[in-house]
Image 1: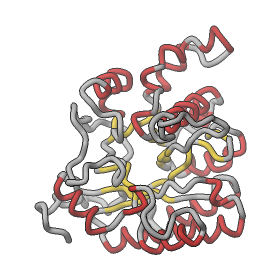
Image 2: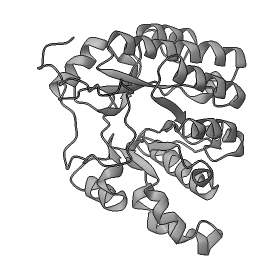
Image 3: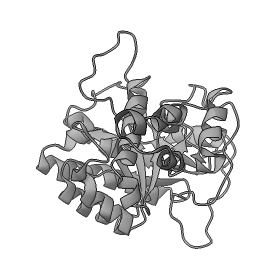
Length: 311
């Protein structure tokens, strides 16, 4: 089950081009998604199902009218993909984060009417991190529903670019780390304990700088070490990007294999020949993991067809 699986169905791509978010041709690798290539790659790598998501920046929905129509296009496009291939895909819904009252309604519609398996939240929106009080109404609704949040990064606001270093390479990981620490320090995780939070890209730098974070109580009044250590296991972490013979053991040692979920970052992090770049140990299944996509009781996804065959 691939929990970090981006998809840009045709209707969504048309909308993104109309809004100037994507060029009419070309664009980033994740925007060149196609269903046939996706299914071929899933089959070639033994991936039974993927939870599709579209990490549209929250600022794209700053205008309220666009927030209504744009989120609708994104969510309905992904829901249609799931309806057409129900054993191969689930999806994480988009919401208009900068309009929390609207986001709550969009969340309810996505979960209740479209069959979403959770919600994608940017790690920050216009400089507001996920522990910001402005998001409390959304967290309250998520907690009531015992929902899954897929926290996907954007570049932190106000940072100067490092020449030759793409924002995806370090800045995204920093923003994930910032929002995770903000969720801990603000008490958001404690106030909404029934929400499952997946941190993209192995949690950014969080698992590797946790010892430094434990000092924050002594340095600037941050969470006590006794609170920081269990907070690491409050999150789930996907394997998109960090899995390697040196990074994977560190992640598993810090949080436990039962908190690690398989994720590819398709179509960004796969070789052109269709084989996943995931050397190193595979995460083991464990209790308490979110289990998207949602299926009928007793129903399990079938094994992936042999390479070259698609449903």
